[in-house]
Amino acid sequence: MVTVDSETHCWNWTGFLTNGYGKFNFNGKNTFAHRTAYELLVGPVADGLDLDHTCRNRACVNPAHLDPVTRSENIKRGLMQSTMSNPDTNPAVRLQQDGYRARRALAKLQVWSI
Ligand SMILES: [Zn+2]
Image (cartoon, rainbow, N blue to C red; front, side, top):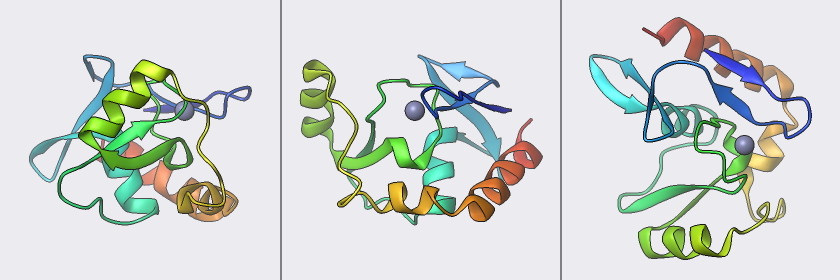
């Protein structure tokens, strides 16, 4: 359900998309694929925060390309077409260096897909 783009390093969701975002059925609930990938690899996203796609690719589920931000910040960033987030402040970027955990998360996403 995920293909990795060797150029952008985006993990492109190949399953069902809603409004450009990957969606799948997880534990009987319809969830966003990028949010689940982030929570698996990095941790829970605080209430009220959105995950901003710093790569501006909505189908991407690479946690290193996701930055938890407030809704208004997310909209502002979308308008500004921001570039990649700072690896020093984004724990997911550091986590991506850990290929083993990343591969395990990808494997889980494939198992959970419908
Ligand atoms: Zn991406």
